[in-house]
Length: 106
Image 1 (cartoon, helix red, strand yellow):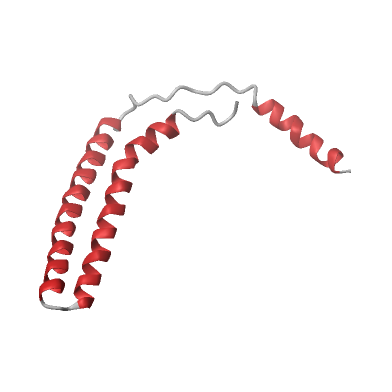
Image 2: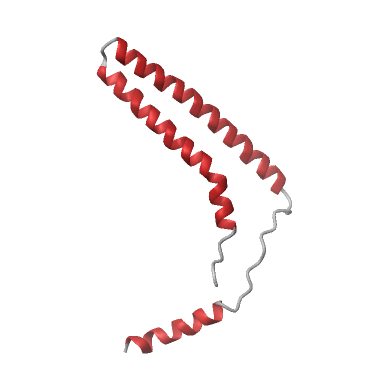
């Protein structure tokens, strides 16, 4: 019974496999501007991460020397956030390139 229900789905999937995959084309109107804006946004994000790292390190130092545990804990959380943010920012280009190379239908 399940085979009879899934048979039309299998036929449709077989038809999808016959569709050719288009090659990515990055020469459209406005693409250069979009790439420039994306580069500026990534540069600003990197600057914000560096500033945040400096502030978090200062909070850790203040918490250590003033014996203020809460400030030190917030500074450590800030450093963790900076590391995660830098990892995400650094992997964006690789994820886009990986996504462009995916074959949605084989």
